[in-house]
Length: 203
Ligand code: 5GP
Image 1 (tube, helix red, strand yellow):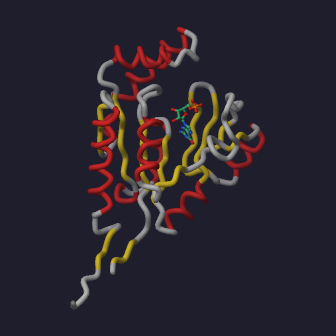
Image 2 (image 1 turned 45 degrees about the horizontal axis):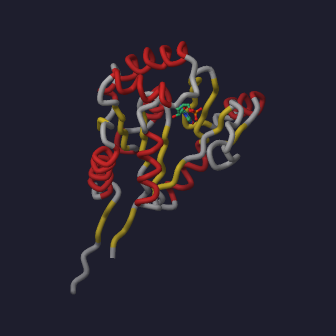
Image 3 (image 1 turned 120 degrees about the horizontal axis):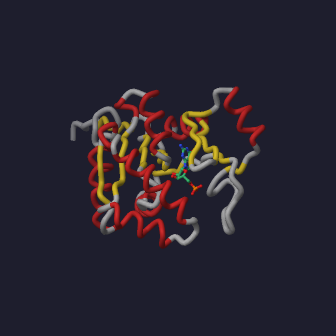
C-alpha cells in the first residue's frame, strides 16, 4: 500500500515559440493524472479556441475584480494581453492528489516560484536549440508581424538570461528527446518522499 501525499505542481515555462505547449500535451496524454490549470485571459478567443478548455475568456472588469479578491496564484501582462492562474482550482486539484501543470510565461513562472517554497513546485525551463531556430519557429507560425517576432526574440534573450531561477532546463531540439527528458524529471520528482511514502507490508 502506498500513501500519496499532495499532487505535484509542475511549472513548464520558456520563451514564446519554444514548444512548451506540445511537450505539455504529450505529457498529459502519457499520464492523465496531470491536469492543466485553465488560465484566464482578457484577449479575444482565436478561431477554434474553446471557453473553459483553452482559457476562460474574461473582461477587464472581471480580471480587475479577481485581482482585488487576491484570486490569482500569479498574473502577468504577456505581449500586451492580461493572463492569470486562478489559485483555488489549482489548490483543490493538488489536495485531491492530482498533478497540476502550469504552462505559463517566464514572468508568471518566476512569480509563482517567489511565492512558494522550492519543495512546493517543480520548475522546468524549455530552451530552443539556437536563437536561429527560435526565430524560424516564430516565423513559421505565420500569425505574427515581423516587428512582433523581433520583440519576442528580444524577450526570449531576457527570459533565457534568468534560466538559473529554474530547477531544470531542457533543450527542445527534437521533441521526442525533450519529452524523454521531461519524463525522467517527472518520474524522479514523483518518487521524492515529500510526495511518495510507501508503506511496506509485513508479507
Ligand atoms: P497565447 O495568448 O498565445 O495563448 O499565450 C501567450 C503566452 O501567455 C504564452 O507564453 C503562454 O504560456 C502565456 N500564458 C498563458 N496563460 C498564462 C497564465 O495564466 N499566466 C501567465 N503568466 N502566462 C500565461
